[in-house]
Image 1: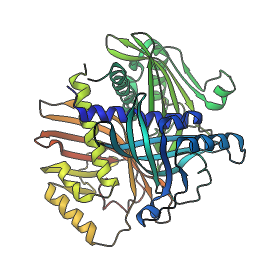
Image 2 (image 1 turned 45 degrees about the vertical axis):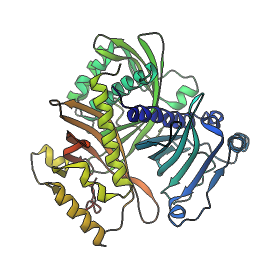
Image 3 (image 1 turned 90 degrees about the vertical axis):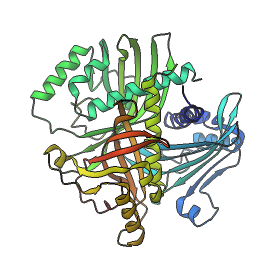
Image 4 (image 1 turned 60 degrees about the vertical axis):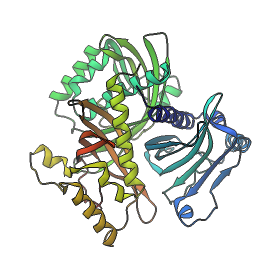
Length: 159
Length: 159
Length: 159
């Protein structure tokens, strides 16, 4: 028999895989629906986090702000479209009550640029809280803490 | 209790892991047996796929063609042996009837060249159909769609 | 129902994820406790392994030696602290009796250096034996066989 801990792990791994497949498959319109309506999304550099500085590089305080961001990205032709491939590892998860869990993992994003070269774009970790809803697990918050400090010209896109 | 969807996911993840372990462990002779006998394998650049162009870079229309390719690779000493390490993520799968399923994921291949340098060789996605056989799940088709467009000198080897 | 093979696979994947999360989260003090007390840890280049040469680059013959190494790393300020992110794939596992299993997978380590650049640091494979203890699965031996041969200045740290 599978334990409740391993079953939770499977369910949350499936959510993380769905999350990255949504971004990598360029289905950004589906990205906000992976959060609860008052879900929070932020991207911060590791150095800021370690120094206790709040300033995130990107912050959406609810799903409406995420939808706005997707609309902007689709209409502004400022940015060259990235071709991301996310890879995750080292998943840890921990139930917080019956309907809430904390979860973390490492990520690396491989990007293929306009001339077709693929390289490591960014590494870091996700530090998330998820809640069980009628539609399945959703993000109550996703905190993206990145290690990579070279200029992040593409960071208009969600990671 | 584990759901049928999560169980399918585990079984298919195991098949994908076996697939990449076979290539990365240089057990190419076992590669064709991961397909059904009339299974199809193709590698195509993403740009061709998006443009609706059929021309694949590599195409095997059945397992016999795959076995021939392995024989060629083992006997032709044209190519420096690559040292691939495949990494997969973002697995999605969907049952199509009781004995068939569609599955997709991202991949990145890290290669270590002759002087011992490891780097990103190729990123892309798998777009597969699998069928349940007496020996377990096997590929009915594997479609490798790659993002990376710099010269692919090693593409004689399966990805 | 989940099979015993898939359940073992889930349990061992969880151990590997815990292992890499311990290193990547810089909780090195917890690293030796993932081994049994007489557990063995070694890092060897693939070329040595293929040539049957024993000489490992790092060897700890029990958990006490691992704890000593962590103490040294914490007190010697010789090495710039690496920021590793491990990614695993291609997990295979095989029961050897009721309480022991063999397991292997590929790894790639992405490192972010002092000026904030992230790149492929090392690729290779783990070749492990694990045993079931009262506290769960633990490593009886972990053999790290690396492909990457450029100078490994950071190899004082566990991989």
